[in-house]
Image 1: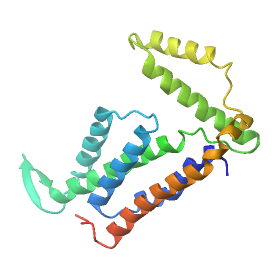
Image 2 (image 1 turned 120 degrees about the vertical axis):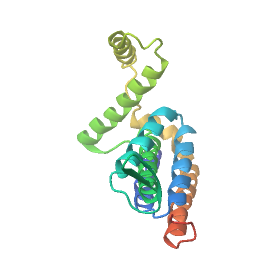
Image 3 (image 1 turned 90 degrees about the vertical axis):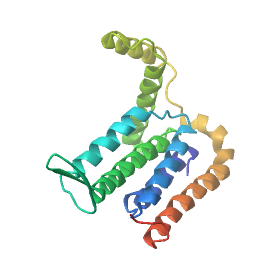
Length: 202
């Protein structure tokens, strides 16, 4: 297995542990862990978009009230069950989002022409998002987008990492396998703790 694909495989294997998590505490811990994992590999954590996602998903679930009645806004009941379910699903989405960020940090490579095309898409998506973060000011937007495209096209002479260049990183294979194995154990361990009701379901 190529070093560049280890994180991708790890993310795919960890995916069910997050999707099937029953414990609200468990999904919070999983989401926090995956966020730390992504940010430690160069991804940025933006609190405002995550808060918007948390608020919007939780609010949507209030349309189907159930559980303990907390209070009412006019005739609209606010229930603990609806809030908890909405927050659980929002945390699941956030965890999946940052898991996907982590999966592509090593620029995964796929065999064949289609695989090379997919790898290039990952590469240029990362280049665009990374370059956008360095552009200041970002207003007007059209001018900022033009600057991003110019910078990316200027650096396109540095083609995506060729498989031969990855050979230098093969010595990190064992280290990456062990570290990603630990990540899997932690995420699946949290899933089992939630499934066995050791962590509160709420």
